[in-house]
Image (cartoon, rainbow over all chains, first blue to last red; front, side, top):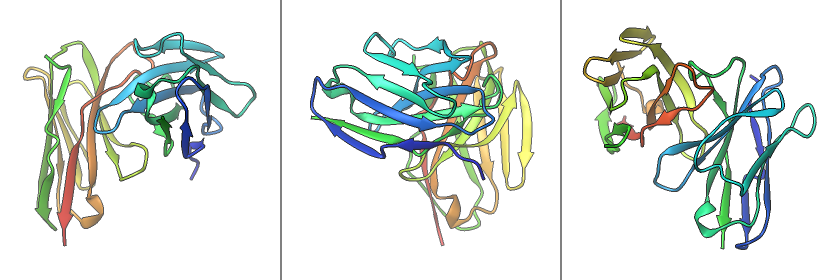
Length: 115
Length: 112
């Protein structure tokens, strides 16, 4: 069964460093997303991406964050100058259609720990 | 008032029990309502989605939406130990692209 894969599964970084989280969405999906879940908190929407541009973004997704689809398979989330409060599980997701119905397929997540 | 509220539990039931999970919401503009299941250290997995008010059944799972009360439910019949997971409700506006608003999740444990 096709699945969304994410790397790394866990990354530890120092405050102020840049981090790139990588995702390989399901191959025939066209819409891509990043969500995050701080420990003990809700899963929160960060950004949606389609046709090489951002479709929607939340208030969380400020200038510190950026997304990119550098090639035909990868989808990345870059966090510049990480802060302690960026420590969370980051989930990548993809969907075949525009995601209105909530049919998103999530990866297993990348745990980011900022020290 | 928070947009989506969900009792975090934990909820513990014996195998074979009927489980009822619920969420309330405040924004009447929500149109699509989903239930996701999340096993420990895994990503959320979509169980069911419904549009507007009504019931939807899929095997042992039934999703209910009552838009007049701003209340959604997931029922699990003949619960199994493999159903032990955190259940997340989620919802979104019809025009959004994948911007799901999640509840905090209810942790369910089904004891053999």
